Length: 325
Image (cartoon, rainbow, N blue to C red; front, side, top):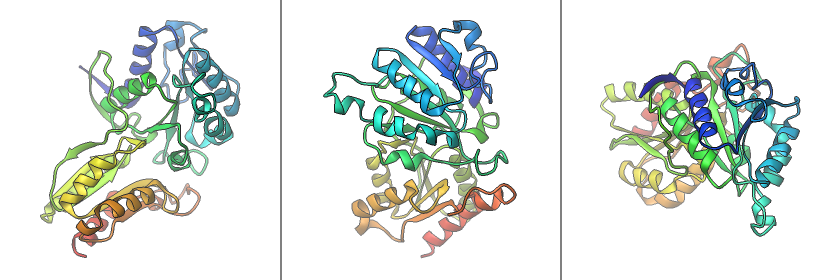
């Protein structure tokens, strides 16, 4: 085990994958000698050469189109989109090509070896073009997997799981935790399962569900709630698509209450899909309405970033309101 921050864990995962399989390629804007804008790809070009870790033009649609072509011919591309906000020019390639390649060809061709990395979310004073959380846009698309880690251990294991998964995978990295989240990470190759949520903490009164950077927010809210004698069960969804309905439903059968939190705006956010599904599965067991604690339905602000984000106090208020309903 080594102590790493999330950036180091991601870099270590890429190094591990590239060292084990020469088909694994890493490319994107400034990922070469510069090591990426956040340094997630530091030293990979020096170690594996320009043929396996290289810079691309500043054309996101081209990056993913190129990645689709490589994956279709047997390579294992890991394409970086510098900020998740920049992914929208590549939306057509991801939604209409990556996600449908296997289906439209009857599995004669597929791009299952494709992984797309992108830093998402707020917390770095990045303003409206460097702070968005676009996971829900892609969750509407059959044929993709969407993964979001919460800490260094999860980041390495889930990224290696994504790289080796036989489906095109979007890997959204919570950039405000890149250097803030530090923990023990195994040095060897290990892969965490995609599509399985993790029950981080068991409780009896209410279920708290989130992913990525919001897990740290949930933990802070739970500390406050437990001082009030409220027993909280905490679940990290980890994979948005496909999401682990059974684990969440089984928890709500037990607690009778659910609070879901994410950074993305409320309207059309993935919490709405979760709430609808759990309401269908657990209606007769619910003790209060399912609550959503999210970002606001506004463009992501610069000066009012703290007010926009769903912080631990907002989650704590939702817990209290649910229990006291």
